Amino acid sequence: MAPSSMDGDSLFQFVVKEGNGVKGLVDSGLSKVPPRYIQPPQERIDKLSSRPHNLLAIDLSDLGGAFHNRAAEAIARAAETLGFFQVVNHGVPLELLESLKTAAHRFFSLPPEKKSVYLKGVSPSPSVKYGTSFVPEKEKALEWKDYISMVYSDDAHALQYWPEECKEVALEYLKTSTMMVRKLLKVLLEKLGVTAVEDSTIDALIGLKMVNMNFYPTCPNPELTVGVGRHSDMGTLTVLLQDGIGGLYVKVEEDIDAGKKGEWIEIPPIPEALVINVGDTLQIISNGKYKSAEHRVRTTSTQSRVSVPVFTIPLPTQKIGPMAEVVERDGVARYREFIFENYMNNFFGKAHEGKKSLDFAKIDSL
Image (cartoon, rainbow, N blue to C red; front, side, top):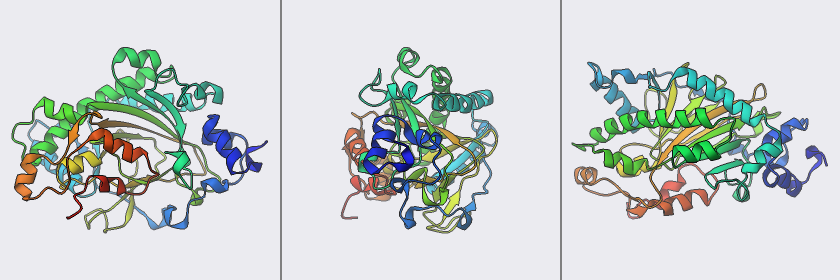
């Protein structure tokens, strides 16, 4: 049966269960978006009503030098307001960034049967997962995205089990990005008033690391769909490589230079830059001073798009809560303490719905 004539159950079987993904739909010659992918009007992205974020990228080579304080202030201000910023001179080799984009296209160009070997339940390692959308079993409208997710434990495991088409570049990207994240977290924790930032403190916040490759195929009706729905990331910091096509949007939480409260602004690709966004964990440990960024991704009718995020996340066994120094300064804890695994289960147990994942940690009386 051609995908264009499938009912909802058959389409779900073809895309999700059999591992054909959205790319399989598009490769079948799809001429219009199936009903299962049509978002309700309030969730659609109107490109014309959004404007680009025009603030300059932060030069990380300034850290530790004569302009350290200027760079640190810019990092902290971005984390306190938009929760998103772009960085250059970040230490991740530029040729590696190009190789990553090539590797992502190479993997998603594989026949479905080569990708489906990484489906949940059959993948040679539970830390490597190929899939589509976010949690398709719980979503009323599916997201126009396929992905491969690779959780890092050690180099040997990565080189044995991660896909041949991308494992070496993905591993190098994860390791060089993690070095940058450590520098950023040291700055952000010092700005919270943590006087001596220990390596163990940072280790606790980034004990789990994973790299994803996302693929957004061309879409016949991009105005009806989303690549990724409204959400914030659950972890500490996310590093994102965009390609040159763009499509990333962030919601403004308060009036700032970049836009007005409630407005969606586009984060345009900057050559040689990486995007950094604050996750829920950093908002929680900062007692709300730093803001996790609500963001989403649009689709396009002209070109397939790739993005490559690295997520730095606490280990599931880690206890998370506002840092003592910040609670003492604020006089009140706005979030409770919890074991991070419980937060993860809550996050992945629901469809994307803005920043509602944070409700799990909020103290109700505040």
